[in-house]
Image: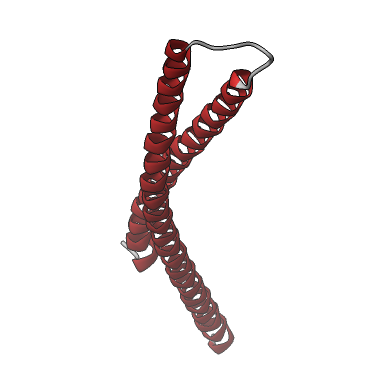
Length: 143
């Protein structure tokens, strides 16, 4: 087995690891985008609800005001929780991105080594073939 063939096995393994890391990074990125979209929707809903609560010349009961305030507090708590999740997801996103970049760099390195070995082996084979042709030619001229 040639050096390039041995390295090719490592290249295939590196490719699998890089693809896995890329899929994991993409999944974390999708989750982060989903959380951000949910946060945006919840903030828009809160703003619409607050706009609805502005007095339109109507009186509200104290009970109604308390219910609205309690609902706004629930929405604010949801926004706080989502914001924390986004912060954690962003940290995970950076870790997965770094992991993917590391695997990508490793793959690129292995592919470069494979190409160098293959090129060297082709050059050695061509040189060997040329030497054999030269020997054959010398034998024929000696006869």
